[in-house]
Length: 93
Image 1: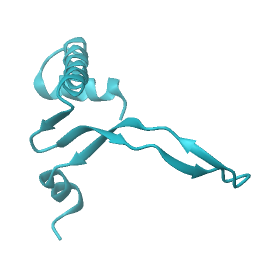
Image 2 (image 1 turned 90 degrees about the vertical axis):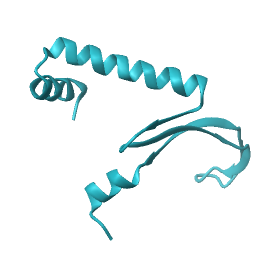
Image 3 (image 1 turned 180 degrees about the vertical axis):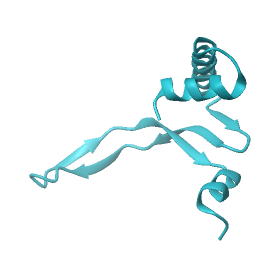
């Protein structure tokens, strides 16, 4: 689904204009970015948790030549789905 499709669906369900729905999505996106920069994690109940995760520097291999290369440390984003989301999408086990 594209952002325009999400905004259109949200506008129909909530009864607002598509412009207002797009503004709400933009504000939500901005809030997620701000919280991840400040706190390092953001929990959305029923959806999951966004976290910043640091990976260590390591040695890897170039698959074409087999040459050893250094992979620098970096920060990545990780999303962990909530149990409620997993159960509703995948069904209970």
